[in-house]
Image 1 (cartoon, rainbow, N blue to C red):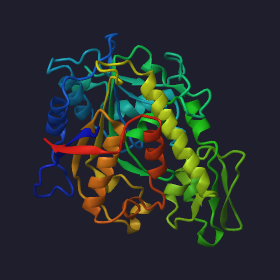
Image 2: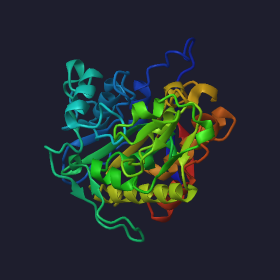
Image 3: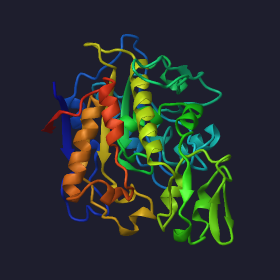
Length: 371
């Protein structure tokens, strides 16, 4: 059966290219359209998975948006039902790779302070916090020893607030990718990326050092005016690929990207299976894809020759596979072109969604409903 996907479009207004309309009414409308909010029997806190974005830049998911989701899920109560915002440690971005740095970045972006003090922020896989959650085996899967962020222990439900953005290995990050990658703990993320080996296309390398600057593992050096990657130190995070303004770094084996996407899909299934079960037997989760600040959701290097569509709106569903299929269709319709025309990466998320559907996470078939 086709799943319902709800779309709230950003109101068109003068100057929306620079300052999109406030999306909070859309968050509220979407939570109302998908009500009642799916909660597990345990009554634990509602975990709102956010995406902070790079340090020293505004939050990609604003605290007020997350709080709106928490209030709407609680039926408009002044405080959410033990709601909390969370983000997990990065494997590729300096300033988001330790618990202390991540908390500082969250505070600088307005989480857990001021008007949003009622929505605390917790590092999802804080080494000093709840221990990681061992994911059970996925029937038909091949992941072994996958571990999830400890914040999911005792969670009553999940609301995933995902800003759709470009990704060097996936093409684009939708709800399935965020569910698989961003609720894994840091060690699991490193294991997922272990098969990715970026290579420098030497004739395209300008020797600018941009890739060296972003590598937090000191895996890149400049020799004879060209970048060289030490694969013993490289983790495959992909940061170097995003900043190369010559697009001269890419995985050495296209097949490795397919395996990576399929592993991320399995990780998403494992995360879903670890969530509490709501009425009807589905995971107690709601997924939102934000197509809001699209002009800032590709790296500066890739955006040099790519269209930057203005904000479109927000989509929501309880089926992350259907949600992504609908989201990508909406984005391609706005672009009038395939996703790579926006992301700057040749690969798309087709293998990811196919594997997720085959493993029963959801179906790409969907019904679009505007709210």
